[in-house]
Length: 142
Image (cartoon, rainbow, N blue to C red; front, top):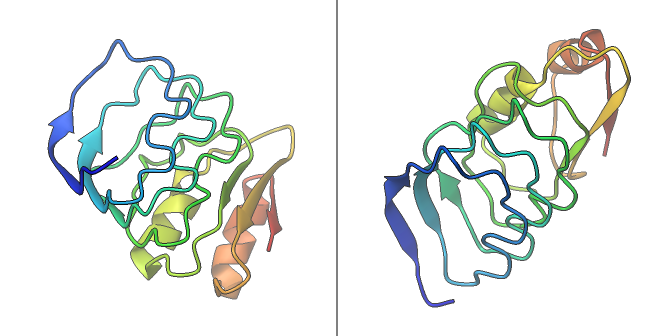
């Protein structure tokens, strides 16, 4: 609970469950990165955390559960590998950077069953970003 930064990449390809991994880490501000290539569940992963930056892109290609995973209000910088987010996901932070917002949108996979991207009300999207979200089969909620 007192760690403020993880300055190295957590290369754990056998990891499949990140539920509650960094929940309520009130001092944690930065993580270099985390290998999520085989992770299937990230429920509450950063719920209540003070995380500001996750430097390396997250790979959510196998994730099937994201409940409350990014319910953290200070998150500014986050990246996703393109087209790897396949299930509904929410970001409550009102301070997401423009690069992070675009990476989230680029991270959305094209889906045949509608999924929902929920962003904080303070996040402003361009018409082009909204059109991209819709074209990929997603519903935008704010």
